[in-house]
Amino acid sequence: MSVPPPAHATAGVAVTARGLRKQYGTGQAEVVARLLREAVDTLGQTVIMVTHDPVAAAYADRVVFLADGRMDRELTAPTAERILDALAGLDPLVSSNRGR
Image 1 (tube, rainbow, N blue to C red):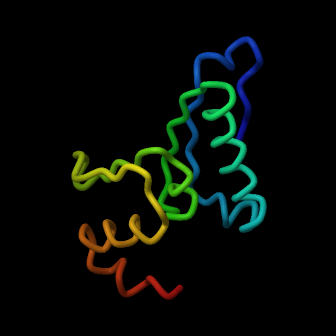
Image 2: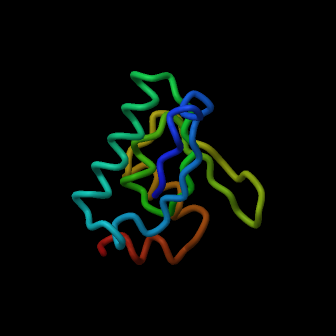
């Protein structure tokens, strides 16, 4: 992930977080998610994260679910468990992969 130069830091940041855990490992992926959360809480930044990782998504204030390119539902104050429940409603394969 590249960090925008300081001159652009006030404009917010968009992050594609696909594969964070695979690329950086669980510990580093959570460090990145916490840093993004801190940017929102302390610097007033807007962060848009695109991910399939329910743990990373749980750091958000709001999670929007897309199905067939359209907004299907959203969660506020999400947890990884609530995100997995919502995903299970979108795709029957998700519930069979929950234990992994």
